Length: 318
Image (cartoon, rainbow, N blue to C red; front, side, top):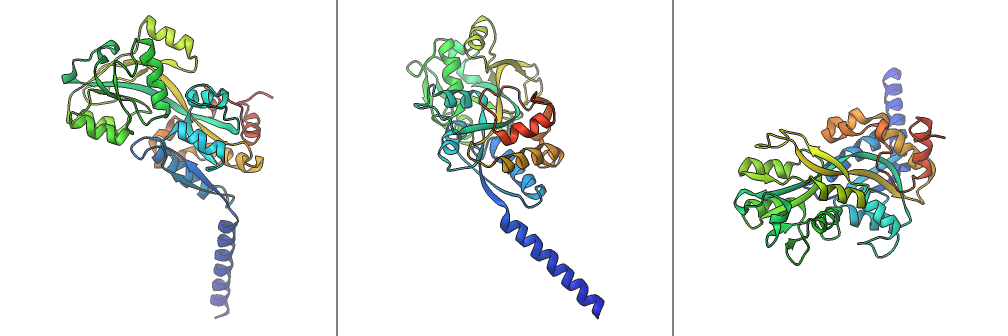
């Protein structure tokens, strides 16, 4: 009987300790993106693993948002603690460049996560084969003010397109896919990781054209916007896509409010990178995250907590 009582008491103490740790955990709100994109499920996976593996220090809750542009403003205002954003949007926001009206200097970087490809897709019936063919067409450019829309403006401008000779439709990924399948759109541009479920769904239902981004015009785009990288969507990523598609890519990065305590950001960074296999089990996009590339494409200042961990690992030089 004494042994049983001892075991019960030990279990009760462990439960109490666990409850106390959970109560003391730093609760953080994690802004991601639309529910049909990569940011939301990946953010959920990161939140789950970091919360479980930080020894009771952190408790992250992922929430759906309008993605990069909105996320930068939310972190700037302190309405959320951390977020996933595109590196080009972070650069523009931090410097106060268009489409931002003021510099969002309260935001700091944690690390680069993975590359995002510009998917320029047209319906087979639209007759679109190259960028210039989008004149007069109805094109989904992403949520208004999102990183997706910023990229649309950048590449449209290079090819002589704008919102006067193209009819822009401002829709998130899921709604874009629905309208495209219903033949209400001629095309769309997604800046997103691969493979994208919405595009997979579309290519299963109908034949599409992946419009290439290549040539001298694209070289000029990269010279003007150096955070854009010449890249290619690998062959076989989507049904019917038998060849690699020349395109551009940006980087998805993790950001945090500058006022977040250094020890909290250090623990967050350390926990993420030391448990990447666990994150990858929950979402395969995490398999593209690596410590070796943690600083790639990051042009805004690192948070001191993240910088400390990255310096310890030799990714940032002392």
